[in-house]
Length: 448
Image (cartoon, rainbow, N blue to C red):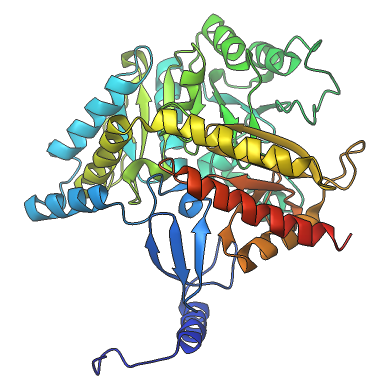
């Protein structure tokens, strides 16, 4: 140790980190009393020196795990060349990533609008749609999550446990949007059964596009797999019907894949689980290989903006673009779409075995490595097991496993466990996650 880095105990480091954080950092997305100081692959170490296996890809941002060597090398190579290029100039890394994203995208998607965050990319898609259609109202799902900026709050779910209170005093900034019932076959808001429902939830899009708008419809925005909305996949045929209705009304289908893309749901783009070729796909989270980067991929028809209408100084930062490009190249070379499908099936099979003896598991649902486990107190009434889910998360951490939670809201309201491990996860790591989860769940259920 040098004089600049004194030999301090791990416990003291953790306490000091927390104290200094409380003094200087404004917490706006929850507050877990844990400092993470080192990561490698799927393993992460906290400030007390305890190691965990990360089943959530560092909040679904590191789709190749911590400190992936090829992403690191791409970042270093870019920094050795040029570290920043303003969006007003051309950049090799920015252009190459856009070309690759378009090359891999379905249909006529060929133009890329860069942003910094998922919400910023959603706003970009809204700008593009409004300019092309002349409308300003968007159809969105009741349990959707598209961001917390002023433009996107109107597209994001309202719940007394979280967002409704967070909106207090913001009314004059919030745009009106057209909400429709959510797709959720486990908890159908319309009280229907999938075998006989004829996708009534999708048919609601038609009514809104015809009659629900005030200033003309601008688009339909959906997540192919709702993450914050409760880890709910769109039922078979939903996206196809949503696209059919959108096209009939001459508005774009905007697919928000901020959490679902880049092999998370299996394919490079989640919508590629279907034959749908949407007018826009929104990317974020993992796009920059761990660095801030988001984008909207769109068709030429929906690519026009007015000068200076939209933009961010750091949008398309070449270092982030180089990292994202390296990540995609690894995904293609190592066939990680296939690995996501294979490991996702292994994970859900393991969870299904645990479910056989479980008192709390009500439903398991997933696509690729986007997997949710809903906990209920009673399988008939489906009463959410909120407190038990919190206890399970704590037990998993105690045993060295990091999982996520949703429900469709955060805080004390979540009753759905999230598994979103890195898409290059190995079979041994999946088995380890499943075994730890099973032990932690058994401990919680033993107290019931």
